[in-house]
Image 1 (cartoon, rainbow, N blue to C red):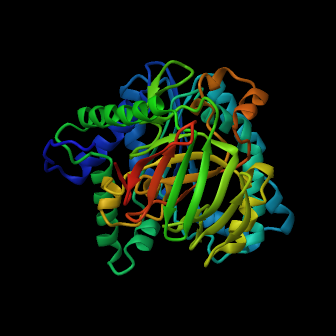
Image 2: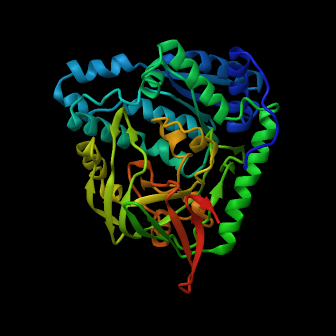
Length: 417
């Protein structure tokens, strides 16, 4: 679905400006007079400032950025009293929810150190994550229901670059990571805005094909994976951009290569093995292997970070069930780069994946108009978490199962049939 348009030479500064412009105009679709709420790490300040400039140029009435400091996060783990880990800044998340309700757009700059909390107490990490999940839930629901226009973009940071390119000098590692971000977000193209529009149309075409098929389930076969996943009643496949509840068209993830839908929370059976590590809230979880029965994880193992995985799926009742299924060809530009990004925004767009936890109501027909009870009756899952993990590879075969039980090949060796 990529473009045939040739790449062009630009300076790093020009590319950074272009990434900011594409994030605001294509990712967010920011409207004149709209407020923007942005989150970023201190290491992403250069991109955050450029996005701020582009947002004001596009007519933003106010841009507010909340910065996260990795060092301050670690100080909590090293010096805070035990009771600290059950607390979250509720007032802050209440404020974010109020901003979204009053029409603010949401932009997250990702790029944190993927291994920040790898040496910290998994019990404390799990408690802190749960406290934040509870506090952020009302604001997050406005995002999962696509009530507002939102997007996620990435900034290269020294800590992330060091994890990705451990054999390179810090400057070289950072330059390599920036280049990988520019390449996968189409910034190196002659006209990135037009190229994004072309790519977006291709993803919509794929989603339309799957919606016409109306499969009842998907069947997965690959090394360590033998799995059947039922799809929610009246499920809708989506890909690329979407029109939010406020009427603004946005592309929530940049990059994006997936078409995704809603699995049925009670219809997952069999074994699934992850094909890439999962970097979750500063902890690396590797070698995930789980068994589902009746929609729920009944056995879970990992070669690294197993305790964090167990705490994650114990978050609440819905954390052991699935909220999203996504199909990505193995030949996607991110997979083709041969790079493991250690960042879900990128790695989920390199491989077919599933997500534990909360469903997106927009992935069921008229889902944004349905009550929680009506959504649950269709098969929607409810949880404090939404965590994607990668199960696709060049050895994975996927079949579509029709309502009458016919089996049709959908993907072979990780590619669309």
